[in-house]
Length: 419
Image: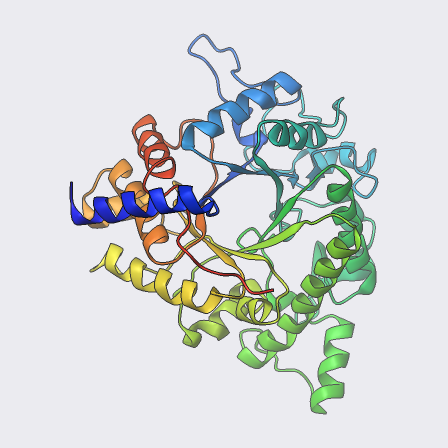
């Protein structure tokens, strides 16, 4: 047994005696991504419009060792439950059926908003019955990608659509600078709380193509003029404009925090942040690409947990640079909020497990194991797996994850969270 194994075993024993909190393993789950899976004979494996089909999805996700299950509440501009805000018949309009480039007739058109019982409410209940943390994965802009799809409410309110500095309108994408838009999103949060959500994860990577370029709407321009006595910069990449617009996004998260607190239920607010390097020098880039200063949210106690979606590790030293980033982020969050680090098969950012494999020449299961240990050793409160789709985490990878999460990395290291 190596020295590290002895240390891990000692920590495990001490944690069991002292009742320490479990090291978290969160999984993002999108039932839509399971709907197309077929057997060799052409039969579909998961009928995700039924209770049994979604329970089968959950059983598959649990193979990774996940204990926090964050269900996608929406996608392609359709809420996956009977929503009063995103109501039909608008969602049945021909335009809205073209909601994703790869949309396909799985069981006819997927009608998650018509299913009985309410799938989201049902699956949150199933998770709690199994002793799992039950939560929601909410893309920051619920249309997920607004260039080819419209949300029902957004479509009905063109007066709130985004505008570029040259006056070009982004049809279907509403700005948070309008109180009515914020009120709409808070009512959506109410619907999630009513369905039994205990954890709300707002995904700042899936932001519907959000850009400061389309925030030249009257309220933002007027606020700039009032504050600075001049016209706003016409370059939407100007850091001053990005910080200006980020104030609006920050105010939304403050309002969301207050709305959850007013519900009377202890809902944990989590936000997912991509492309993290851990240094203060990246602030302008963060504001530019995702529209909110996550460090300020942490400093002001607005969020309960930060979920790092990807880190800007270096090709010449993949795991070493990852460790340093984890250390800096964990140190920043310590005493303020929890932090989860990524163990993701998704590689859209070119920083997921497949990219680590190419850079390190390690197998996927070896990379996954190293990332879990790095998160645990450097003061993280857990890991996040994004997204757990059918067989994207191979059996060997799942075995390594379960072994670590039930063994050496089962309990968190001591990191006190101040009130």
